[in-house]
Image (tube, rainbow, N blue to C red; front, side):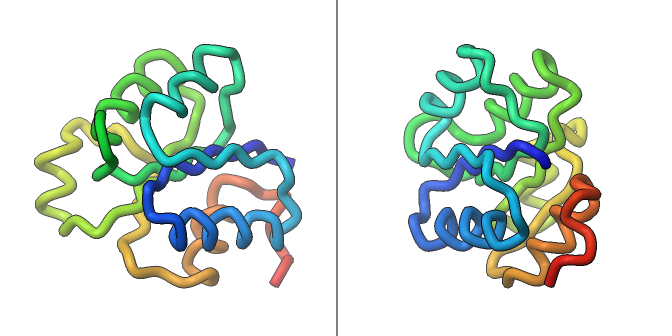
Length: 126
């Protein structure tokens, strides 16, 4: 079973991701709405295997967290969840500081496919 962190300020999107992960059988899910809260968990040693990260957040932007995670916890897989275009994404997050992208809007099937790519224990669940 994998551990997850969802960093998303949109409550409905955060709910969709968290509930889909629960449905897929995952229970170790931290869900926060800003970079500061996510950093608190990471610095306390609660490092997830897979992170869902929105880039446009109140306060500090998500791309600064992606850079921090790549430097301090390179084993964490990062799935960027964004409404930005591919061009905007590359401008804000150069150097490919992420493993995959889910472009908003997406549905639970697209989310499931992204999770399966990095969490083999999810395979076979519908």
